[in-house]
Image (cartoon, rainbow, N blue to C red; front, side, top):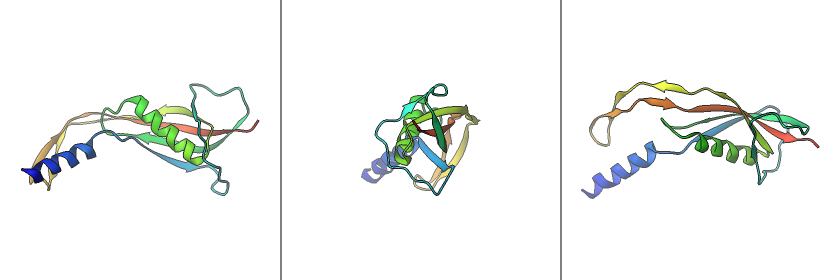
Length: 127
């Protein structure tokens, strides 16, 4: 009973939440100090800036947009960006299905839904 509860807890934690963001630096020679405040912009800023990285945030099925944007903000801060401009919604549909779960010793159903993927650009202000 106790082992089953632990396995169910670990499975739930693994399958829930946790958007992740990957970054590709546009110039891998230049590094920036991490920043504290990163803006999420809906359009190009009026200030001068340069693009420093391409970002892609994704999460499990039906992850809300704010969680993806916060993941982008954290990654952008870590690489030294001042702002993020989301540029593309690359989400895709996942069909319901089944997967073998060796911990539970059988198959479990996987619900369908939207697998969210947001792409954007990390920028650094130059003025």
